[in-house]
Length: 160
Image (cartoon, rainbow, N blue to C red; front, side, top):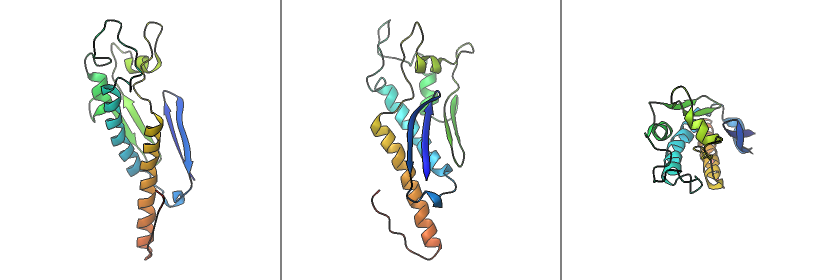
């Protein structure tokens, strides 16, 4: 059985498991890399939709919620710079190194503060969670097919 767990700022937001084909997969790093690519696109949608409509408006008005300098958005929507994306055979670490005067302001937005409403920069709707699980399942199916082919057999997988 494979368990897929996603924690954002130490809060568990996804905890799902699947049994099909999981024993064949020893290295999930390629799947985590696909999830990382999904994350860049997802975070771009989060920023362009103002948190899918969940972010509180700015106290000073305006449309550029959370993109004053663009550094935090850039760090979550593209490789390099202050982006954090590290994959191993069983994990993905994704986030931002952006800070202002040593303060990790993406965390302030993620959690909210006494003076600032919470505007989560990394969060998932149910449809996003389903897409993440599909990425993992598609990868497991690819591995099973490759193992069957190598063994001289033929794999037929349905119900994806």
